[in-house]
Amino acid sequence: MELWNEQGTKPLDASKPQLWESSSQREASRMTDGKDLLSPQPRPTVRRLSSATADFKGLNIGPHVVVPPKHMDSPSNAHETAAALELAKHRLKDLDSGDGVVTPSTPPETTTTDSYAFAFDIDGVLIRGGKPIPEAVEAMKVLNGQNEYGIKVPYIFLTNGGGKTEQERCVDLSRQLELEISPGQFICGHTPMREMAQKYKTVLVVGGEGEKCRLVAEGYGFRDVVTPGDIMKDNDRTTPFRRLTDQETQNSRVRNFGETEIEAIFVFADSRHWGDDQQIIIDLLTSKNGRLGTSSENYDEGPPIYFSHNDLIWSAAHEHTRLGMGALRSSLEAIYKSITGKDLVSTAFGKPQLGTFQFATRLLQQWRKDTHGINKPPETVYFVGDTPESDIRGTNEFNESKLSENDWYSILVRTGVFKEGTKPRYTPRITVNNVLDAVNHGIKREMSKASKAQAKNTEEAIDEIVDGVPVGDE
Ligand SMILES: [Mg+2]
Image 1: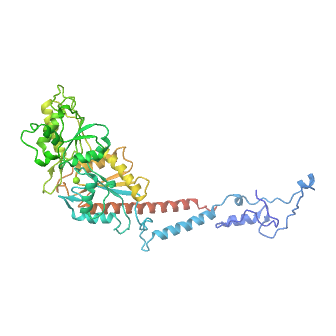
Image 2: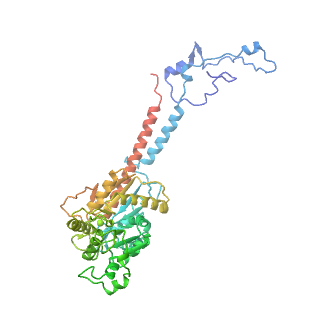
């Protein structure tokens, strides 16, 4: 029921305009109980009552009560509907470029996108034989904002390679790609080994040039690091066919290995002397508690062995692929099996291990937060690699696992181990010629997604509006 004003001509709350009215409504609104409400009406008798003088009779003799037509009692959303239509018109105007084709507007953030990111393998994607792949420099420029959309895209590097500190590797890569790369956006094969530094006291570190991997391991916090050189220096009969060079002898540390228990073996980088390293590793794997010179009877007392990755082959300067750490692992497994009759239990980090992709997820999150102020995971991570067995397999399996919070999209490039005419063992979401094509593909895909999402939102807004428009009685 509505109260009438003192003039008795319109309801007090009838201030909102009614935009639609059917002819039957109009007639009904004029005629109620045989009275024409729109014609001048006699003013109702309204008396003001004072609380001091009001009596029972006065309270019961009120003004006329007029009951309005029923449809006028119903709530109207006409005003909201008109406003929403106006808003939708403006949105459509923004989206329409004028030629009838709906195109995405320039993203509001002209600096960094928060919805996607890139991760790159290095060898065979950005670098080959120590030199940048021609399109790599341009690809980095595109990610840093030199693209038609004016956006920057965060990125990290995830390589199975290693043998230097992350800082040294970043300096090399910065020079090669002509931009500054931070260790905060860089993971190499042995980076996840950092998390095992406190687990073991004395460890053997294998691979890399000279003393570099020992220094890397010590930088990770490993407390007592020995090298094959230390062992050969202590006992030069360890490797019958090779003696340490003067430089190696000088670098290697003096130690009595008869009193040392090596608790774990870490192959940090590619071995430079397979035969010697394999001999020393087998000596330890078949020892009692990692003490050189002892021999286990049941072959289950040796220390565990970890590899920083398991790439069987990799793309170097040579026209054909070269044997990688995975090949060393395979040969050690075969030798161990031949000697002991048992299968060697070993652990590999790096791609395609899901743990490495989890590590990359954490690094990317930290990098986006520290550098770009983005405090949420990206919806999509484009991973660009050249090796189906590590890059593509790892990306696909991580994406399909429950460990991944976002869409990991694998892109295979043809600049590395890819062989024309062969079908990769693990299928990428797309194969492109080079890293520049990969970057352009990802950015275009994202812009297309954004455009479709905007168009869908507008469509839904219009649908909502149309659903909300009151239908006339006729
Ligand atoms: Mg590679």
